[in-house]
Length: 491
Image (tube, rainbow, N blue to C red; front, side, top):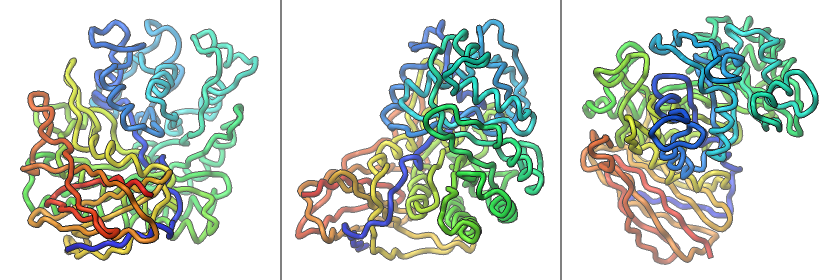
């Protein structure tokens, strides 16, 4: 029996809703075919946005959406994506598959998508191949409500009022595809570029510096030492896969060793955040600079027969287990982690949704995000729970991970079992609070290799989970390789 005590009065700070953010890049079929089909498509759409996909994503209550990349961001010139579509110049997407990008989905379309989803826009600017003036002008075009040539150009293109833009990233992965820069060089560029991100609206723009990948602690050291007073946030990118960058592993065909290696790699997110946070704390003990994990998730080899540059993979219960493990890590570091954006929303990497023509399927990761949305903006609660752990590739992995939060008299408890070979009996003791009802959902599968396909779209989906409640305790069974979310209504 795994026993955990949830101390309802011991609150440990708010879990930012932005931790449940999403990411949509001009990559593969994420934007075109996935989110945007154009106004003339036979697929039902509103202003070009797929109705089925938008309606499904609205169920997730997405707090923030990052766009246009990714590596694409530092190749993207915003002027190519405004004005009449038939007049927009095309380009070759050299980062992702060498396909033609017609720029039919640009600034106006992105904000239209955000408005349909009810989400906040987060834009990544072009530092790698763009100019300071280009970035400066884009900000004015989007956010200035007065009389200026750029604001009037926006009006001419169909948008009278300025958009609200809170989040802006100054470049992307500038240590790699965004310019192969040294941290010292990027640091100086950041200082220059951020100067021209003007605040035209009522709310100041939250400036996010292009931070490190994985365990590049020197990058963090340089940025925090040189620019801590000029940035509101610093990004971190970390992806999970059982293999290496050359052979990441298959998204569906994996053995037990692959499973446990993937769990261990996911837990390395904890190491990365702890170590980057330690550096940030040494320069910023008041925690004024937030950590923005704006790319994370599983990254496997592409499905056979698909374009290698489209990063199209399938999604099993393994992906959902990794997602809950990772989100629990973000919860635990809510004093520094303000936002996270899983990669990516549709048809790319650890997607919420897969599409094929007019067909659409929801992935296990979609279901997991929908189940966990009760944590958004909840107060993190102290959970006294020490799980048995196992060692894999030198990493300690908990057999069971539990996180709890409370908001508006409702407690959300999420629990995940990382073992393939054993069910877990869980007992939760709720202290310093009475509860009147419990409902629960379980995400599991009879075979961990199962995935939702266009022929079998509901092979992996949530089911009701039976719980027993008595004397302030809630008990339930957590099957092997599964994730559960309990909604506890307090008295």
